[in-house]
Image (tube, rainbow, N blue to C red; front, side):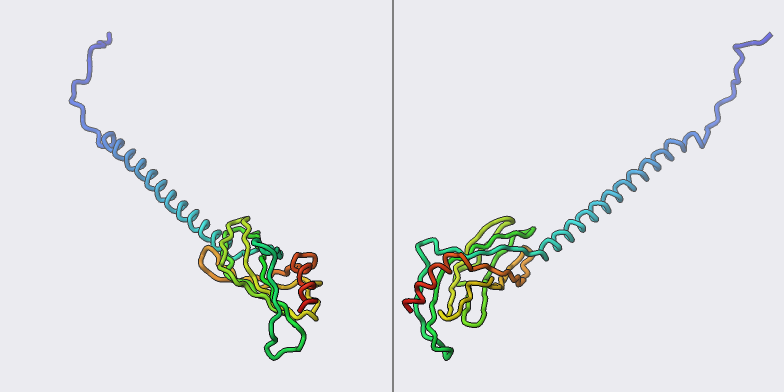
Length: 194
């Protein structure tokens, strides 16, 4: 017969591996948490570095569109000016506005504009203009030209001095079409009176 009430009445010995299991589990969990935190920090740093790199690349790209427009406070003013040792042809000085559209990927400040070709010169006369992304601004310009030069038929390459968000100044060239503009319509009449 088997006595079912019989038990081993020996005291239970402490099992060191059983006590180490919770400690081992805690170490594994802490290890996973540490790896996760380090991975998140490295990933965050990489994302921030990439965003900074992309911002620097955006600042390198400057694209704009420009076209002449008459003065907003009435028509452009003209006057005959004396030549500085040049030809004897009469010259006309015209003040007008040049519309500039920021077609680039970041805001820019157009600090100044200039253009020169035989018989004519153009320079900005007003303050720099901030142009947000896709924004439009106007620059006041003065145009000095000899009446004998037909420069309105070809686009005029203008050099724009532009400051980007990173405070770097770049020069951008853009050919501006003057043919058909208010500048072309008004200038010949004033050349006839010059």
